[in-house]
Image (cartoon, rainbow, N blue to C red; front, side, top):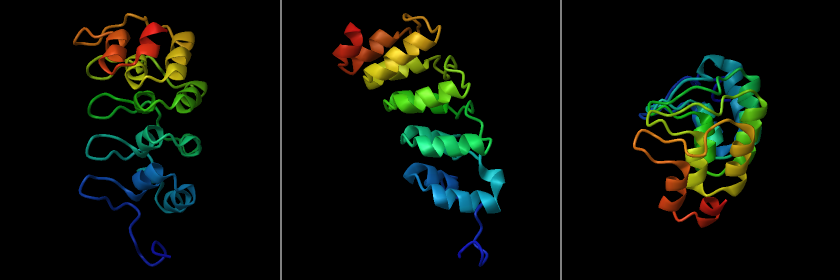
Amino acid sequence: MLINRGANPNSATKQFMTSLHICAQVNALSCAEVILDHCDSIVDRPDWGGCPPFHYAAYYGNPAFVEFLLKKKANPNTKNKRGMTATHWAALNGHCNIIKLLFNNGVDLKLRDQETRTVLHYAALSGDLDSVKFILENTSIPIDSQCSAGYTPLHYAVLNGRSRVAEM
């Protein structure tokens, strides 16, 4: 009703979040469909940190929303201002289901952020065993891959007390 009465689906908050970013955050698929029916140009629009709605869906672990955005041709390899992709966010938050979904849709898991961290670094930091195992079994990321500060995934695991990942 609001859009039909003139509400602008392209409007953004002071942090440059559109209504689609918020939909991705709270997993509001039906609202996202309405918004994109009226304004599909915002599917990859970044917020103040360079994160498109796709990053929010991955960060919050919303697989149905990730699939929805893939069908709407959102770019899953888009990097934010820190060089992070949706896969980095999924790994950081232990969402192995999202990592698998993105991998199965051809997303490059070997992309590095500005500090040259990989998804393996983020998965080790999160302590999610399933994510670490999946990444090791499905990518050629070296287990001792160093970021720009020299940290390996093992360093990140012990940094957060992730003993099960460190032992793995």
